[in-house]
Image 1: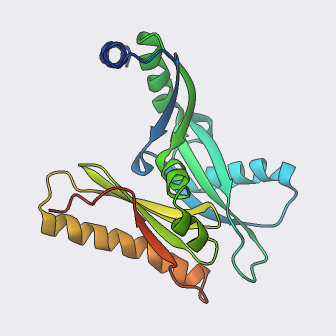
Image 2: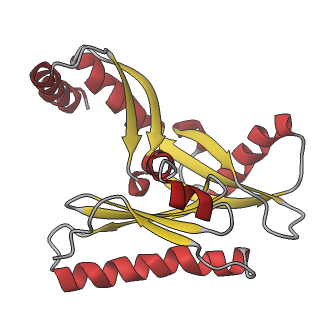
Length: 212
C-alpha cells in the first residue's frame, strides 16, 4: 500500500545517502521463493510464436489471472533425444512490481528492471573457470547463501535448469542441514530424469554455508 511504499522509500533514501550511490536507476533481484517458476515442455514452434504459447500455458497452470502477472521465460537446452522445446516460466505479481516502483520513486529512484536471483548468481558462478568448464559437460550445482536462506541452482551449458531456496532463519544447524539436503534432492532428482546419461559435474559454493 501507499504508506508501506513511503516507509520503504524513506529507508532506501537514507541507505543510498549513507553509501554515496549516485545512480538513480535500480535493478531489483527477487529471491526464487518470491516468484512462480515452472519448467514447461512445449511443442516446437517458431521463435516469434513462443511468447504467446508460454502465456497460454501460464494461464492454464497459474491460479492468478495472467492479466495480474508479469510473465517471462528463459529457453532451456533441449534434453537429449527430446522433440519438444523446454522453457523456464517465471511469473511475478504485477502488484509486487508496482510496490517496488512506488517505493523506489519515494526514494527518488527509478526501477530499471526486475529479475530473479538464480540467473544472476549463476552469472557469478560462471566467472569461475572450473565451474564454467564443468557445466558444459554435465549439469552443475551452484549454492549461494545468506544468513537466512540457501539457494541451490542447477546449471547446464549456461542455463538455469531449476532452483530451490531453503529458508533457514531460526533453525538449528542440524535442522538447516536437513532442509538443505531435502532441497538438494529436489534439484538433483529431475536432472537424473532429464539427463540420464550424465551425472552432476561440479558443485560450487559462492559463500560458506551458515550451518554452524
